[in-house]
Image 1 (cartoon, rainbow, N blue to C red):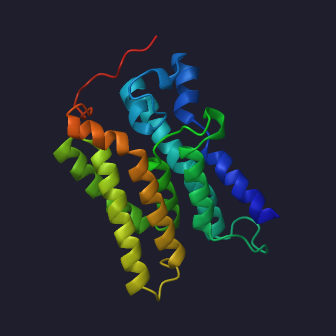
Image 2: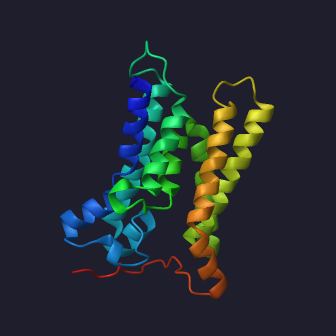
Length: 214
Protein backbone atom coordinates (compact mmCIF):
# COMPACT_ATOMS: atom_id res chain seq x y z
CA UNK A 1 0.00 0.00 0.00
CA UNK A 2 2.99 2.31 0.50
CA UNK A 3 3.57 2.72 -3.23
CA UNK A 4 -0.07 3.71 -3.77
CA UNK A 5 0.06 6.08 -0.82
CA UNK A 6 3.10 7.78 -2.34
CA UNK A 7 1.24 8.01 -5.62
CA UNK A 8 -1.59 9.89 -3.90
CA UNK A 9 0.96 12.06 -2.09
CA UNK A 10 2.60 12.91 -5.44
CA UNK A 11 -0.75 14.02 -6.85
CA UNK A 12 -1.48 16.13 -3.75
CA UNK A 13 1.97 17.75 -3.88
CA UNK A 14 1.52 18.49 -7.56
CA UNK A 15 -1.88 20.03 -6.98
CA UNK A 16 -0.61 22.63 -4.49
CA UNK A 17 -1.37 25.99 -6.21
CA UNK A 18 1.67 27.98 -5.14
CA UNK A 19 0.85 30.95 -7.36
CA UNK A 20 -2.58 31.21 -5.75
CA UNK A 21 -1.19 30.79 -2.21
CA UNK A 22 1.63 33.32 -2.62
CA UNK A 23 -0.68 35.78 -4.39
CA UNK A 24 -3.24 35.54 -1.62
CA UNK A 25 -0.66 35.84 1.16
CA UNK A 26 1.55 38.62 -0.22
CA UNK A 27 -0.80 40.51 -2.57
CA UNK A 28 -4.18 39.61 -1.06
CA UNK A 29 -5.52 38.80 -4.51
CA UNK A 30 -6.58 35.84 -6.64
CA UNK A 31 -4.30 35.18 -9.62
CA UNK A 32 -7.21 33.57 -11.45
CA UNK A 33 -8.84 37.01 -11.79
CA UNK A 34 -5.90 38.53 -13.67
CA UNK A 35 -3.86 38.02 -16.81
CA UNK A 36 -4.72 34.75 -18.52
CA UNK A 37 -6.47 33.47 -15.39
CA UNK A 38 -4.08 30.54 -15.27
CA UNK A 39 -2.38 29.51 -12.03
CA UNK A 40 0.90 28.67 -13.75
CA UNK A 41 4.33 30.26 -13.56
CA UNK A 42 4.00 32.52 -16.61
CA UNK A 43 0.88 34.21 -15.29
CA UNK A 44 2.48 34.55 -11.86
CA UNK A 45 5.33 36.51 -13.46
CA UNK A 46 2.90 38.61 -15.48
CA UNK A 47 0.56 39.42 -12.61
CA UNK A 48 2.69 39.45 -9.46
CA UNK A 49 6.20 40.21 -10.76
CA UNK A 50 9.61 38.58 -10.63
CA UNK A 51 9.94 37.72 -6.95
CA UNK A 52 6.68 35.78 -6.72
CA UNK A 53 7.15 34.50 -10.27
CA UNK A 54 10.56 33.00 -9.50
CA UNK A 55 9.26 31.58 -6.23
CA UNK A 56 6.35 29.90 -8.02
CA UNK A 57 8.72 28.53 -10.68
CA UNK A 58 11.05 26.96 -8.11
CA UNK A 59 8.21 25.54 -6.04
CA UNK A 60 6.39 24.09 -9.07
CA UNK A 61 9.63 22.46 -10.22
CA UNK A 62 10.33 21.08 -6.75
CA UNK A 63 6.86 19.69 -6.07
CA UNK A 64 7.00 17.34 -9.07
CA UNK A 65 10.67 16.43 -8.69
CA UNK A 66 10.74 15.71 -4.96
CA UNK A 67 9.40 12.15 -4.92
CA UNK A 68 11.11 11.34 -8.23
CA UNK A 69 14.47 12.23 -6.69
CA UNK A 70 13.78 10.41 -3.42
CA UNK A 71 12.52 7.22 -5.05
CA UNK A 72 15.18 7.16 -7.77
CA UNK A 73 17.96 7.40 -5.20
CA UNK A 74 16.33 4.99 -2.73
CA UNK A 75 16.14 7.65 -0.04
CA UNK A 76 12.70 6.61 1.16
CA UNK A 77 11.43 3.07 1.82
CA UNK A 78 14.56 1.49 0.28
CA UNK A 79 13.38 -2.01 1.18
CA UNK A 80 9.92 -1.53 -0.34
CA UNK A 81 8.99 -2.24 -3.95
CA UNK A 82 7.75 1.08 -5.32
CA UNK A 83 6.55 2.28 -8.70
CA UNK A 84 9.04 3.62 -11.20
CA UNK A 85 10.18 7.13 -10.07
CA UNK A 86 8.71 8.80 -13.15
CA UNK A 87 5.25 7.45 -12.31
CA UNK A 88 5.29 9.62 -9.21
CA UNK A 89 6.50 12.54 -11.29
CA UNK A 90 3.65 12.03 -13.74
CA UNK A 91 1.15 11.93 -10.86
CA UNK A 92 2.50 15.29 -9.66
CA UNK A 93 2.17 16.81 -13.13
CA UNK A 94 -1.40 15.54 -13.32
CA UNK A 95 -2.04 17.13 -9.94
CA UNK A 96 -0.71 20.45 -11.21
CA UNK A 97 -2.81 20.36 -14.38
CA UNK A 98 -5.92 18.89 -12.74
CA UNK A 99 -5.95 20.06 -9.08
CA UNK A 100 -8.89 18.84 -7.07
CA UNK A 101 -9.00 22.18 -5.19
CA UNK A 102 -9.95 24.15 -8.31
CA UNK A 103 -12.39 21.71 -9.92
CA UNK A 104 -9.50 20.12 -11.87
CA UNK A 105 -8.66 23.39 -13.65
CA UNK A 106 -4.98 24.09 -13.02
CA UNK A 107 -1.76 25.10 -14.72
CA UNK A 108 -0.33 23.97 -18.03
CA UNK A 109 2.29 21.63 -16.61
CA UNK A 110 5.51 23.06 -18.05
CA UNK A 111 7.39 23.85 -14.82
CA UNK A 112 6.19 20.67 -13.13
CA UNK A 113 7.17 18.60 -16.18
CA UNK A 114 10.63 20.16 -16.05
CA UNK A 115 10.80 19.23 -12.37
CA UNK A 116 10.28 15.53 -12.93
CA UNK A 117 12.82 15.53 -15.77
CA UNK A 118 15.36 17.48 -13.71
CA UNK A 119 15.05 15.05 -10.81
CA UNK A 120 15.31 11.95 -13.00
CA UNK A 121 17.78 13.02 -15.71
CA UNK A 122 19.44 16.35 -14.81
CA UNK A 123 21.71 16.35 -17.87
CA UNK A 124 18.74 15.98 -20.21
CA UNK A 125 16.79 18.71 -18.41
CA UNK A 126 19.67 21.19 -18.39
CA UNK A 127 20.37 20.52 -22.08
CA UNK A 128 16.84 21.71 -22.92
CA UNK A 129 17.16 25.08 -21.12
CA UNK A 130 19.09 26.86 -23.92
CA UNK A 131 16.44 25.75 -26.41
CA UNK A 132 13.63 27.13 -24.28
CA UNK A 133 15.46 30.45 -23.81
CA UNK A 134 16.31 30.71 -27.52
CA UNK A 135 12.76 30.06 -28.75
CA UNK A 136 11.36 32.47 -26.16
CA UNK A 137 13.84 35.17 -27.20
CA UNK A 138 13.23 34.68 -30.93
CA UNK A 139 9.43 34.46 -30.86
CA UNK A 140 8.56 36.25 -27.58
CA UNK A 141 5.97 33.51 -27.05
CA UNK A 142 6.45 31.43 -23.90
CA UNK A 143 3.73 29.07 -25.12
CA UNK A 144 5.70 28.25 -28.29
CA UNK A 145 8.92 27.81 -26.35
CA UNK A 146 7.18 25.53 -23.85
CA UNK A 147 5.54 23.26 -26.39
CA UNK A 148 8.55 23.15 -28.71
CA UNK A 149 10.87 22.23 -25.84
CA UNK A 150 8.58 19.51 -24.49
CA UNK A 151 8.18 18.08 -27.99
CA UNK A 152 11.96 17.96 -28.26
CA UNK A 153 12.11 16.22 -24.90
CA UNK A 154 9.69 13.56 -26.14
CA UNK A 155 11.77 12.99 -29.29
CA UNK A 156 14.92 12.89 -27.18
CA UNK A 157 13.35 10.43 -24.76
CA UNK A 158 12.39 8.14 -27.62
CA UNK A 159 15.87 8.38 -29.16
CA UNK A 160 17.63 7.67 -25.87
CA UNK A 161 15.39 4.68 -25.19
CA UNK A 162 15.92 3.18 -28.64
CA UNK A 163 19.64 3.84 -28.98
CA UNK A 164 20.89 4.05 -25.40
CA UNK A 165 19.29 0.92 -23.98
CA UNK A 166 22.48 0.23 -22.01
CA UNK A 167 21.53 3.02 -19.61
CA UNK A 168 18.90 2.18 -16.99
CA UNK A 169 17.81 5.84 -16.88
CA UNK A 170 16.58 5.78 -20.47
CA UNK A 171 14.04 3.00 -20.19
CA UNK A 172 10.56 2.66 -21.62
CA UNK A 173 9.10 4.66 -18.70
CA UNK A 174 11.34 7.57 -19.64
CA UNK A 175 10.00 7.55 -23.18
CA UNK A 176 6.33 6.98 -22.36
CA UNK A 177 6.10 9.54 -19.54
CA UNK A 178 7.74 12.24 -21.68
CA UNK A 179 5.32 11.50 -24.53
CA UNK A 180 2.29 11.66 -22.19
CA UNK A 181 3.49 14.91 -20.62
CA UNK A 182 4.10 16.44 -24.06
CA UNK A 183 0.59 15.54 -25.21
CA UNK A 184 -0.92 17.06 -22.05
CA UNK A 185 1.08 20.27 -22.46
CA UNK A 186 0.06 20.58 -26.11
CA UNK A 187 -3.60 20.13 -25.20
CA UNK A 188 -3.35 22.70 -22.40
CA UNK A 189 -1.80 25.20 -24.83
CA UNK A 190 -4.48 24.82 -27.51
CA UNK A 191 -6.02 28.19 -26.57
CA UNK A 192 -2.58 29.80 -26.87
CA UNK A 193 -2.16 28.43 -30.38
CA UNK A 194 -5.54 29.84 -31.31
CA UNK A 195 -4.58 33.27 -29.97
CA UNK A 196 -1.29 33.15 -31.85
CA UNK A 197 -3.17 32.50 -35.10
CA UNK A 198 -5.51 35.39 -34.28
CA UNK A 199 -2.61 37.66 -33.33
CA UNK A 200 -3.91 38.21 -29.80
CA UNK A 201 -1.44 36.11 -27.80
CA UNK A 202 0.59 38.05 -25.24
CA UNK A 203 4.29 38.34 -25.98
CA UNK A 204 7.12 38.59 -23.50
CA UNK A 205 8.24 42.18 -23.32
CA UNK A 206 11.57 43.03 -21.74
CA UNK A 207 11.15 45.61 -19.03
CA UNK A 208 7.35 45.35 -18.95
CA UNK A 209 5.90 45.95 -15.51
CA UNK A 210 3.61 43.32 -14.00
CA UNK A 211 -0.11 43.92 -14.00
CA UNK A 212 -1.18 45.94 -11.00
CA UNK A 213 -3.43 44.15 -8.54
CA UNK A 214 -5.18 45.45 -5.49
